[in-house]
Image (cartoon, rainbow, N blue to C red; front, side, top):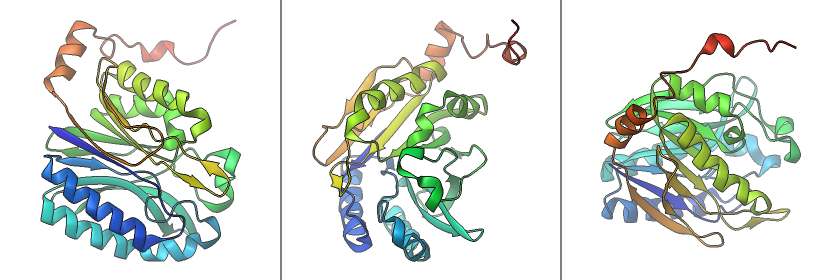
Amino acid sequence: MRAGILQFNVALGNVAANLSRVRAGLRDLARRGAELVVLPEMWSCGFDNLRLAEHARRTPGVLDDLAVEARRLSLWVAGSLPEAADGGVYNTAYVLDADGEIRAAYRKVHLFPMTGESRYFLAGDRAVSCPTPWGRLGILTCFDLRFPELARALAAGGATILAVCAQWPMARIPHWDLLLAARALENQVFAIGANRTGADPDLAFGGRSAVASPGGEILARAPARRGARLVADLDLSEITRTRKTMPCLDLRVPGAYGEVEG
């Protein structure tokens, strides 16, 4: 299958501008044969934290607009948006299928402490994956990438592709490069990481969106400092070949991974 990534400068608080960029990007990626497109974290509004409730109220309409594009282009699309629920706001990554239907909604579990996300967002409490025509798709959001337990839980639950939506800072972009490849390699899955570029008033973002193979190879990578529309072909048979050659998942011993003696 052909995966696509839309990397762009998310305009802080400007839903109309961001939606326009996404529409144009999806149309271009569809023309280039993409079947699944991953968008950055909080792609509709960025971390416009003081107006999150307002942006969350607009998310159902944003999803309706995205569904129209998904149906028109026969695309699966994944990306995170603010979701109003439980008296607060979640950072929720939605997966829409090629009929524009919501197939999964994952609430970000690990909130980033250095920017005080827990002051503005509620935390999710479970891993989420969904079936697709190409295998089960697991979802991670930005800081989640630093927690191998979550990616492993998704892989153990049958995920063969990980979609990672992010606003990863430029200062730690070497970690992004390393961790995306590591999550793919250690779980023998494809990882599709969409990061934003540009800057907010207090933070610059690193771009370098990428697709990693089950062997940890980078199949495609976007530049650091500008927008990009990236495509990569995923040979799904590589998952089976890799796991047969190096059967790490089959050789796990979960009972030994509990309490540590000594």
